[in-house]
Length: 190
Image (cartoon, rainbow, N blue to C red):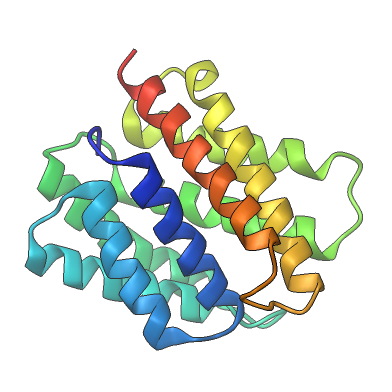
């Protein structure tokens, strides 16, 4: 969890988001395998199971407005159980899955509802997840959260523009995600 290539992780997350919004679940799974392996360096069997859990959680979260947040949390709890065993980490997988799906919820609310300051809620939700799972100071991970939230805004604009894989907004999103993961890596090593 504390040793990853921000360029690789950011690029793979951008690919995962692209395939998620285009409902291309096969390519999403491929991106998820790469993302889980690159970000967390779990064994290959755990990577494959973890990527499958992430895929399933995203599939049950995807329908709007009739998604299944409880099932998404249950699947992500299983993912975080794998991660905790792999890392010998001390976080509670139930709490980690709650924080994970909470940022999904806040982002969805940001996408579909008028809010006074939509980005701040998303930044805080991501900051809470990072601080909890990495055992980091919340103020130290705020920049990583801010950049990832900004990448989500770009992703939302890309979706609104038609989700064209050739749209240059994807390159902007990817760059923001790379910067976000570089900031996260720096924060967890302070």
